[in-house]
Amino acid sequence: MTVYVDDAVHPWRGERWAHLLADTLDELHAFAALLGIPRRAFQDRTSGAHYDVTAAMRERAIALGALPISRHHDRALVRAVIANARRQGRGEAP
Image (cartoon, rainbow, N blue to C red; front, side, top):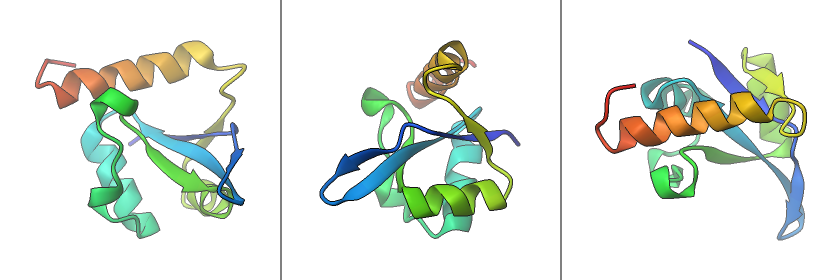
């Protein structure tokens, strides 16, 4: 299971946010459940196949084994992970 959390924490409504991504949607949902994120919070394939997480939750995700990545330095990896999740969301083969 490979789960990633990016370092692009940006302010929104008084909090800082990052993105939780995974190689597969099943991995993404399972890891989000470990963090206590309800499945209804899932960002669908049109918005990037990721969960938005607070900066504090990002640190917890790293402690649980998520790989920290840089949205700026690992752009190709971030794009590939999102594209794979979008394909899965549409029912296409990964």
